[in-house]
Amino acid sequence: MIRCENLHVTFNRGLPTEKLALRGVDLSIDKSQFVTVIGSNGAGKSTLLNAIAGDVSSTQGKIFFDEREVTRLPATARTKDIARVFQDPLAGTCGNLTVEENMALAYGRGSRGKLKPALNGKLRELFKEQLARLNLGLEDRLDAEMGLLSGGQRQSVSLLMSALQPSTILLLDEHTAALDPKTAALIMDISSQIIAEKQLTVMMVTHSMRQALDYGNRTIMLHEGKVVFDLSGDERANCEVKDLLDLFAKAKGDGDELDDDKLLLGA
Amino acid sequence: MSLFAFFGTLEIGFIYGLVAIGVYLTFRVLDFPDLTVDGSFTLGAAVTATLIVLGYNAYLATLLGTLAAGAAGLVTAWLNLRFNILHLLASILTMTALYTINLRVMGKPNVALIMEPTVLTPFESLPLENMYLKVVFVAVCAIVVGLAVAWFLNTQYGLAMRAVGANTRMAQANGIVVKEKVYVGLALSNGLVGLAGALFAQTNGFADSTMGIGTIVVGLAAVIIGQSLFASRSMVVIVLSCIVGSLLYRIAVSAALNADFLGFTASDLNLITAVLVGLALVFPQLRREWKAKHAREGKQ
Image: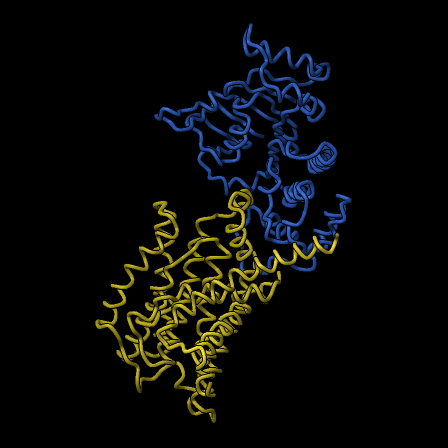
């Protein structure tokens, strides 16, 4: 479904601040596979997601969706295939539009905006039905301004929005990191439901080793812009957080202490 | 204030209501502060007046004036999007260039439209005094345009445009082509301002190279007054409140100028404008502060 061939991304090329964010990522993800992506800060996790979404253009290498090459396709053109949920709950929705307007925008994702009313009774029914799944009482607040909702509520709506259009790929970039544990669990729950229901191909970046093993069916770790290990099947099923940490230390090279508190704390 | 003066005030109020809708589109919807309007108001008037004097049909002339002003908006958008010039600066550049262009279009500092046929001519046979006819005509124009803009903002395309101004990243993630929306929004906004200029020239009988100075402030004043009075999420209410804001602004200004005990003269207009806009800007904040204070005291 998604295939990256020798993908390189360099920021500030030729400047003293040059940063090699991705240095040759080769990755092939099958349809309906749910891949969790881990790695320390600056390992290139978000860059990889942004490159696949088209927000960041690659300096070398190719990206395919199925057999279509999309390397040069702008981000907006890729939204036909890709839905995204960001880490910042404020990023995925418009605070000064209403809940239903936000959902209408997501409903129109991938199609050119037409000169016909964005909302109608039928759509409102659909949105209500979807919002009711959250059990947050939002189905009665369709015309409330998004900015009035809490971070968790906004992130829940962002998730629903990502599933309003049939897409095949879902990119989750630490989408529970900014939430309290209880809300984070709720969001993960809804995510799993939607993913299972729509049979999506998923890449989820997470800082929590626990989450990385509990969800999905494949885990990859990035380090310094490269995939350093790739677990799936039995190997992954028998893997514990501790093993993951060992693997990580090995990948980084001997004598290199694990210095990322977040990785440990997240476990 | 005489009845004649009052109707004159309403007439100008409705015309600048169109300006206010244009300013609303840029400042509020797209979050793109656009000062081009000072030039595009005059451009709309200049093109229309010049074509009418040359013998063109007044409606065709008005349409072309509107389109010319819309093109001016495209130039500002292009400077900003293509060359990353700060939006405010890009619009100032276009506005400055337009001053010369307007003089070139007219070939002289002003064009008089006395006795020339205008968009009002077909209605002059109606049993309605000219003073009232003008007000009714511009009121209908402003309200029809306002309703059309409100409808547009509620369409898929219009909603996408609002998303671009509210959260560009989210808009992009939902497949919205941001640049296109900015181009269309600026063209539409300046087109409406140009239409206002064209109507102003025809109801007042002239186009002048300096007539556009301060258009942005008046438009902004109307938007702010309207929105501080009507807090609503409905696009129809929001857009029509721009027109109401424009009317109230004009009435406040002419009341201030007409109140003899205040001793203002016509030359004091700019100070009155600045004070009114200042008040309209400060008012919502004072109200919030007062409410917050009140709520605290109430709890104790």
